[in-house]
Every structure is written in structure tokens, then in C-alpha cells.
Length: 334
Picture 1 (cartoon, helix red, strand yellow):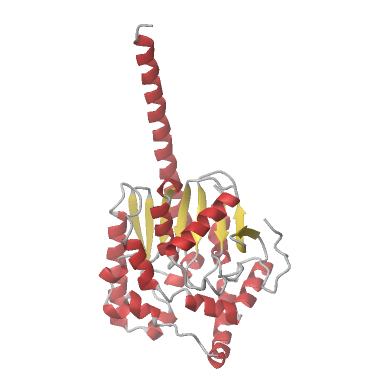
Picture 2: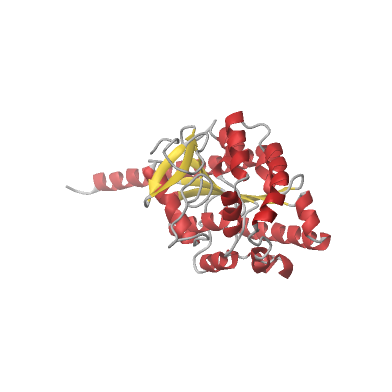
């Protein structure tokens, strides 16, 4: 792992460091101890340190990991031969390599937000034995289009954020600075200032837009694989709205989207033995980890507690099988 002040023209993270994966530096920050380890998967336009508040709270009772996908946030950009957006397989594989390189033992509790849901699902498809549980933070699901009105389908969402020209970027920055300053108000100063400054950069803005470019393809990729494994799942379904959403989306569409998300997450949790859905109505999608840290941390606690119970039960069953085998062996004539 290299020092976070490694020579680079890119912005340096205020905490954490880098792990080299496939010749690129991936930003990673871990805190706490014990297991299972909780791993946060950011949404589009978000970065690992956006989840710093919940990360710090979770690190009080287990190991917590923040990171930035290759090509996003403080991580190195991708090569011209492998630009954004990426496949879910590429992102999931990179995350597993990162966790292994950091000697962070599986299984993990994955905590995806928004676009991170696609990547968490792919990780669980590829490495089901490495997943102990999921906390679904208003995340995308491969069956999104089956639950949403056409105007809020994945293809429509891909078109919502066209690549801005320099003049549009200049117009966006004051509002972006104001929003960021408010969101990070209670973060430590060095983290707050670094994040606000980075958010103003053209690179970060364009990367966030680029990651939304193939939502339909990501959902298709996931539909070719299995459901999430039978692990504990808590889904936090956000049905509150923020002013930006209300300004851009008709009220009827917002109502249909919230109803669709509620049904979609209910279907998700119904596929596992321990699945819980919690409706969050007092904040918007992008503000979940800022306004309702308590709900996120409680969901993580619940999934960890259930995962530990399951693990304990397996250990007991294994011990019983070993004892039975020993008894049978002793009863045999020698």
C-alpha cells in the first residue's frame, strides 16, 4: 500500500491510502477491527468518503472499509483502452482483488448505495461464499424496469445527465459547492475541505455522469446470473424526495417511482430466509447516509448479528457432525 501523498497530478485523499491493482492505484480507507468486515459501495457521482459518517459509526463494532472504484474519486483514472463506464464483472473483480491485497478476510457485509447495487449483486454472483450479508441502501436492482414507469426506466435515466460543456460546468459549481458544504458540515475539516474542492473539479463531475451511461447493459449483465445468495438482507427504501428531484420530475412520476421501489425492494428481501425492508420517508435518495446514519448503522448491526448467528449455528452443526463421526468410529470393531 502506498502513502496517500504519492506523487500524482491527481488530488490526494485526506485520509486512507492506495492499493495497487492491475497497475492502478485504488483509494482505500479502513477502520475498526473484527468481522465480518463491512464494505461500502458508492453510488454514481459519489465516492467512498461520502460514507465517512456511517463508516466511522460502524467501525466502532467491526472492520469498515471505504474505497473508490478504479477511474472514480481519488483512485487513478482508467486507461484509454478501458474507459468508463465499466462492466459489473470488472468492478466486482477489482473489489475482490483489493480486499485480498489488503488481507481483509471474507466473508463480507456489502453495503451498496444507488449504482453500487449493481456491483454488489455481481460480486455476490461471482463470489457467493465471500458474502455474509447485504444492506441495500436505496440501490439499483437488475429488475428496475419491471417496477418503474417508462419515463423512469434505466434507458431514460441514462439520458438524464448529458455531458456538460465548460459553460454549464461553471454554472453548476456554485450550487454544487453550496450543497457539498452543507452535506459535509460535520465532517472533520481536512476531509470536508478536500471533498468540497474535489467535487468542484471537472474530472469528478464528468466521471459521475459517465458511470450512469450503461445502466441498461449492467442490468442485462446481472440478469444472466443468479439471484443474490441466501444471506441476511436489510433493504432501506427511500421514498422521500429532495428539491432537485421535485424540480426535474413530475409529481405523478415521483409517486410511481416510490411505489415501484417499495415493491421492488419487498421482492428482493422475499428471496432470502432473513430479509427485512425499512421505508425511509424523511430524506431523499442522495442524502440517506447524511440524514439517516442511524437507520444505516442499525441495518448494518442487524445484518451482522444475523450473520454471526448463522455462522455460530454452522460451527455447532459441524462440531456435532465431527462428534457423531467419532462415535461411529469408536463403535466399529478394530
